Length: 368
Image (cartoon, rainbow, N blue to C red; front, side):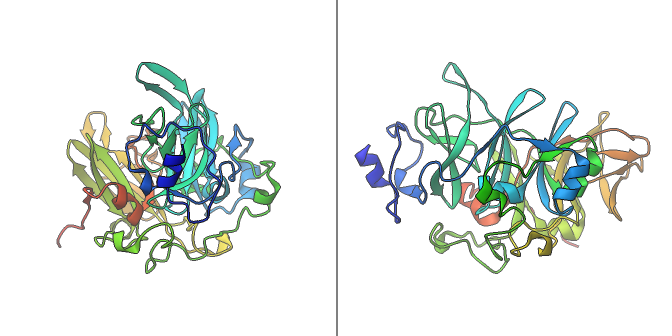
C-alpha cells in the first residue's frame, strides 16, 4: 500500500486511505493525481424528484440536464446540481443507473450499475474517489473500492480492473426540452439534504472555464499534452463502433444544423438545436451563453434509412416530410409518435476525449 501511494501524484499531501488492490491495474499509477480525500463530494443516493410544474419553477428552463428514459419513464439530472455531487446512485424503471458528470471535462454519461465480470455478478454503488486522471474524475465502487475512469466507464485499478460498465443511452438537453418531450417526467429535487451544496445550486464555481481560447487547468492536465487538432475546450459528442471512435465538434454541428453520416457499419444522424446554456460559463447559470443541444440517433425507421435537414425549430426527413424534435420524437407526419433510437453518445471537452482516445476520427465539414 505504501508503495502504491508513493507512485501516485499527491501535490496537496492528501491522506491516502484506501483498501484498493493496487496490484491489479490497467494503467501506470503515476498517471493518477490525488486532489481530494475520499468522501469529500456528497453523493446523492436514490434521490427525490419533482414533477413538471415544480421543476419549471425550480430550474432555469434553458439549463442543461442529463435526460434518461427507460420503458416510458423519464428522469432529468441538472448538470448544475451534478457539478456539486458528480454522480447519483439511482434506479429508473427498475434498472440501476449511474448518471455521472465531471465538470472539469464536461463529461456527462449514464451507466448501468450492474456488472458481470470474471464469472461474478455485481450490483455496484459509486462515489467520487478524489483522484483525477487526464483531468477526468475517477470514481470508486463501494463494494470492492476499485477505481473507475468516469469518461471511459472502465475499472483501471483494483479487484475489478479491466471491467467495463454498460452505457445507458441518454441525452443532454434543456429543462424545457425535457418537459416538452416528457410532460410526465421528473427532475431531480433541489432538496438533497446537503445544505452547503443546496446553497450553491444555480451558481457555477468554474467561471468562464469553457472559453474556447482557454486550456484546462494546468495543475490537472499538462498543456503540452493538449491535442492541437481541436481547441481544448471545444465541445464534442462521440460515437463508437467495434472499438473505433468518431467525434463531432459542436461548432460544426451548429453551423450545419443536421449531420447525416456513416461511421464504420453505423448510419447516424446528428441534430443541433439552440436554447441550452453552458453549465461552465457565467457565475449565475441564467446569464450563461447559449451552446445548444446536440443529440445523435439511428436514422433507420421501418427498414429505411432516413435523411434529415433542419427546418426552423424542428427536423424534417426527406423521405416522408415528417417533423421531428431534438429528442428524436416525430410530432407530425407519417411517422407521428415514432421515436428514433438513441445512438449511445456522450458530451465532453475535446482535450479530455482525445487524451483517452487519440486515434479517434474527427468529423470534418464536407467540401463545398
